[in-house]
Amino acid sequence: MRKRLFYIAIAALVALTAGASATFAAQRTGELTYVFNGKLLADAGSSTSLYVEVKGGSKPALKKLVGESQNQYFAVGPNTQYLRWAHGVPSVVDESNLVAGDIVSVKVRAARNASLAQIESTPAGRVSDRGPTPGRAARPLWLFIGALDAPAAAGKLTIHVQSGNWLALRKMLGQPVDETFSYGPRTVFILWRGGVPTVISPSQLRVGDRISVRIRAPRSDSLQEAEQVPAGHVGDHEPNTPS
Image (cartoon, rainbow, N blue to C red; front, side, top):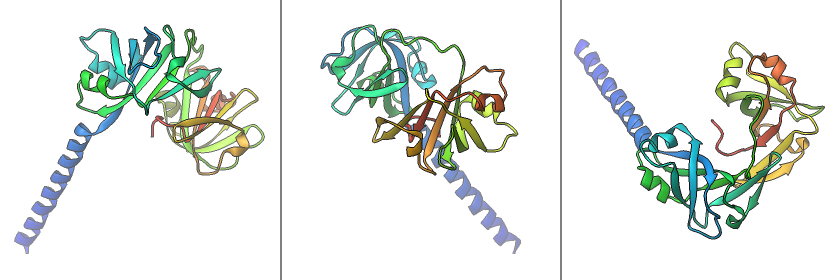
């Protein structure tokens, strides 16, 4: 009996180890989105690449740039989507709308272990253009992501918070996961379908939809204080937000 239990335990351990190894291997060989932010150095026109002076980006992207020049070429293709943001509202534009001096964000989906050259030769999935002088926010961003609990009404919307940025999640410690946020006449509501944004009204948000709420409020505010600040942007099925 003891010998049988011993063999069962060994088999379970082997299976667990194999599963963990497979998961670890999948994580190392899987894909992720690299984000490069910077200034466009040449008009895009109808080129097959964008010439960018990189000034920031996601951590994986910046790690690939260690020891390399800030000025890099990124491939684009027929499936690359171009978005221009103005006053918090995105619109789909043609590549020719991107001009030298604009501040852009280039998002490329590639393997986790890809080299910088491999990443740059992969056509970007999306390029966001915020114009030459996008400005800087005076207050930090609070980002909350979750499922809509009830229809938005009377300047309030409630979501079952599932994710967000570090500031928002830190303020959520010890708080209920269902939180109510404020919106006002200047709040922009965007519905994303197939990566294409459309401006909508609060009444068009549907219960159960994946909602992202962006608030600009002092870092020292409590969660309850931040929830009274009207959101600047509410996204419905917004892509590339933490999950």
